[in-house]
Length: 176
Ligand code: FES
Image (cartoon, rainbow, N blue to C red; front, side, top):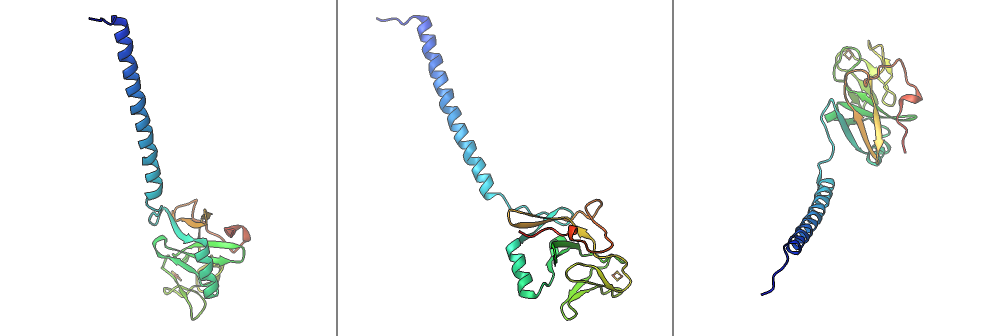
């Protein structure tokens, strides 16, 4: 009967272990990659509530709305803001009146914003004051266009909320 030297047997066992580890590791890597791809393709769209970043949608859709409505403001209820088609790009304005904080609305028959509380009026494209007791334009949220999608940071605390005295081109987010 043939006998295998002990050292040869040990070496063979180690090779088998290494082979098993190699195959197992490869399978683990493949599974991890598929898991990562699954997470990328099926993750929920980033859409947080007021106070966080709230997406308004594809910029093309928003521009389509402006062209169909003669630049009527685009309301994003969930984010409590309007997007305005300013002369130099987009403005995101907080939907709280800068007078005493009421929720103002766009009044199509007047073609301007109208606050129901004390009748402050604001321009539909820049948010500047057109009448009433308000002493400053509608406050701004920072807006970004990333990958063709408009996203607005709706944190109402400073420094994200921008109070202003009038409209300037630098306030607008440029359109692609
Ligand atoms: S709260 Fe809007 S006009 Fe007073």
